Length: 263
Length: 269
Image (cartoon, rainbow over all chains, first blue to last red; front, side, top):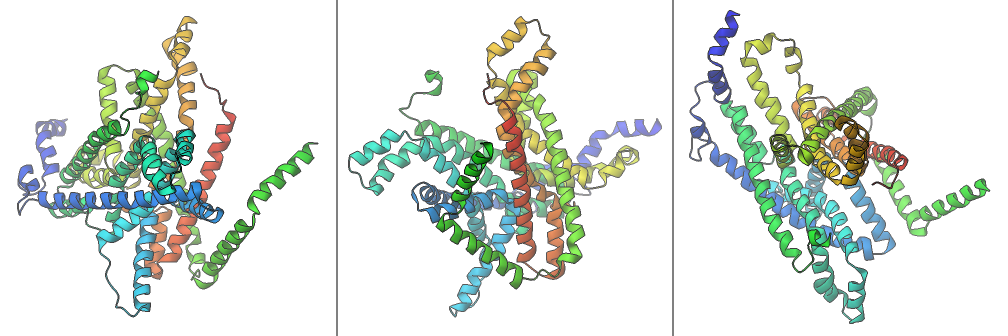
């Protein structure tokens, strides 16, 4: 009973202790972007995360577009190989794929280089991260884009063929623009997944937001504060992306009857 | 008659697989597997066999528990968002947004390192019956994965609850059912049938999230493979086997769920 009253007298102080253990300075000073604060570390981490997410999404889109066309219009061997690719990548955890591709990719490049008579190189974490996540994203976006192309009314493609368009022109003028409204919700989802998957690169030691947070928290011992701050940064990134995505979606659907009116 | 039909069916199924290019591809795949079996080092397998089985069991156990708990949490979350008053729906929506907007790895570390560093500062927590559990890693893993599943599935359940036609609920009310009975007999089953196809995907995603618990020192199959890699200095063999194990589990999950889905009536309201 006595202890409880003693504790009840300063629960607020205990909570502040949790954020700021030992002799640490105030919250603002810990998060401030200048030297003793760790704000700049976190922001650098966020920047790296965004860089990787953007790179991986672009690479994934390229792989996805090629993969979707291969799956739809390719020969039987291409189709089977692509089916194996998408199935395997979507069935194995990203963390395992990242480790596997990270080691395999750097090993392969170095072996090719030594075979060609060059010396081994250190592959930058950024390039490796983009390659690995892009490879994973490619499998998902292949399926998204394939579904979107299948959703285009067949008559539009037949009409384009009837006009005598070459496949390249048809792709540029008909297929890609017509598929966008169907593909954008799925691709937007993939972008959000990409921003969150960058956190997994912390496990292979790439300096992005989650690893930066871990370092800052480990040094200052203010674990909760820094993890909450990083969470807020990720959340802000997601919400900002959602805002942009909404605009893009509205733009890609311009001229189409809205779903509300159709009902 | 039926034997004939099955024979034809089997022949049709075989002919899909026995096209010439498929045979060549299968042979190449077999050759790759045999190469891997003979030219890579697998002599560590007998030593770590048992540990691996325990790791698989633990991963499956975490998967089952977190999916069950997460779904139990997702139903009220979905319900609150679909038809609740604002003071229920707003917190539920905020919860789903936060969970879906931040990486699971960060949530896991926030709980384990963040909350885990606060608990010992309170003597009454250290003296409570919960303390022996709070000192271990797995409760944090279970809570983080449960919240994650609930966040994603809660959003799905919101759509599923909202998608049940109003006429069904009005008819139930016209029959004089109480609100609880309407929920139990009409609303929940129909929403569940709607959500079932996504449940397969969510469960597979959840399986793919389980290796993250290895980063907070829960020994699942991923942690076992890391240990093998550290002990033997092998890079690829443990990872390849790990990928194969996850693919097998995914295949089994998808098969089981497709069986369950096949038993559910296709036509819904």
